[in-house]
Length: 187
Ligand SMILES: Cc1ncc(C[n+]2csc(CCOP(=O)(O)OP(=O)(O)O)c2C)c(N)n1
Ligand SMILES: [Mg+2]
Image (cartoon, rainbow, N blue to C red; front, side):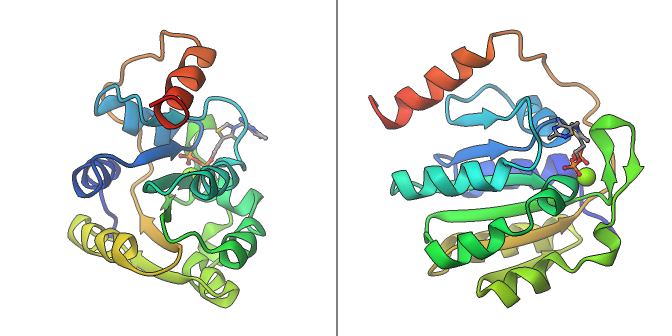
């Protein structure tokens, strides 16, 4: 069974409407952007593998809710970041791993996520972790992770697909950066 990435991304925005949302390059950012423009969205448009580290840095710099929408390929690339998240353990950080078992953005090549228990790794690092493979289970797990003490990881098994339609990021990346930054520094 797999959850629907659009529905789960929408659930994040419904459960935590004011959250800063850092989304992985590609599919995760397409799903987020498809739900509308938001100054508190930070869609990464370059390197994969840094989504969770960027979210961790932000969570340490603000008391507000920070939610990462990572991909399985990106998470595999920086798996060690989970041990740093556990050590620093900001309770305003939730890392969601949208696990579609593929590098969907670059053509759907299979990843090794089927060999890796992300929730188990997160727990071994000392984090609270949840797994979900339906929209309802994801919403419940996400709400629990937000409410829990300490940082949390929610692994969501999703179908490998892009949203039907999503607006292009037709403004510059530096505009996104400055708009996002002003929310936390100047806002
Ligand atoms: C450091 C780096 N390596 C490779 C790429 C090319 N690339 C962009 S998205 C992507 C796939 C990402 O896979 P995953 O994190 O599982 O996200 P999905 O596309 O499945 O949502 C790749 C290989 C990149 N942008 N940056
Ligand atoms: Mg993937």
